[in-house]
Image (tube, rainbow over all chains, first blue to last red; front, side, top):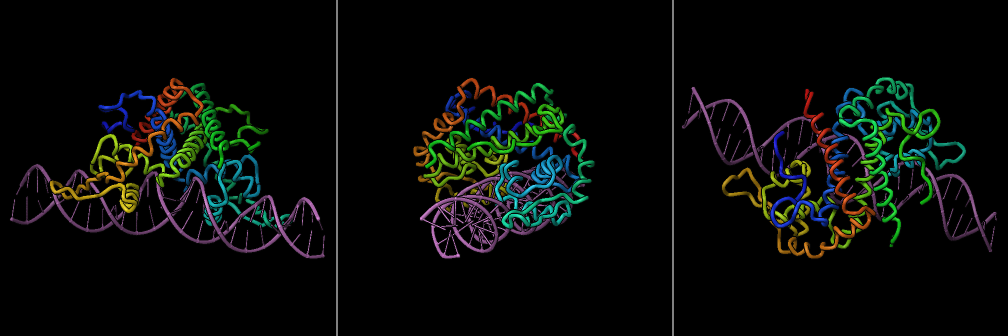
Length: 165
Length: 165
DNA sequence: CACAATTAAATTGTGCACAACTAAGAGGTA
DNA sequence: TACCTCTTAGTTGTGCACAATTTAATTGTG
């Protein structure tokens, strides 16, 4: 507890706290910190499921949409096969999913929940509520913040897509 | 470009877009995505410096505050030695910093910028402006969003600190 | 049909985050 | 002084993110 140095510069001496040139940093650092704080919350809330946070996200997609190719799962999660392949392999080892080459298109691999993977849905039922409580935000605040952050992401993605060398 | 499946569930069929039980997900996913999008922007903006994004953050602290022990750097960045030790070792190999045991307290290691590390400050001068432009947000929006995200992080951290087993 | 281009997964390699543990120095107290 | 405790870095091991490359299957075109 107690006081750390401030999340990032821009508070001591030469530069004022609101130096416009530090806002990028302050925001990106704040987002990074928030993302990691969420990770910490999920880590604890998911502890007795043996799931990691990204694995839980993958399960959510499968719980809602059912079996799908790795490709499509990657589109939901915005992750590529470099991340998903090992992640899914670990989930397979844990007995949560199966992976099977499609017969129609043998390039494609279908990810399917096992009974155990399906059953975890029950055990994870109260996860969202626990997490929401931890945020200390009400419904409207959550929704607003989500919208703003999504808008920001869209702008950043657009900037990345533009002026693509 | 074009359309992906939506960032996470909660949009198709069974569940309405604003199901309160999905807001945790939507927000955490949004934050994660925003954080990664920022990473992408910095990655490109920093490309010709050969710096990674976390290395840039470490340099910012050193540029502003000068030499300091690993411990203190970790407090600024909220990172522990498990992350910082190898990161600093890479920065040392790149000739950006030196690491030296303190003579007063031999447990402590002082991180110091080299001339080359100091010189990078110039080369990175326009980084903040480029990034800010990419966000598409004005000064006030950036500051507001930062505040909200910081407030959220504080709540999450407090929730983690509470009920600590 | 043959062949080039595209696509889906997987693999390789680098780097970061974090938990758990180790090593060694510092500081207090009997 | 000897001992116990706390602190600081570092190390080890796991998992994720992502770029670049590889493999194999599919698609499109001449």
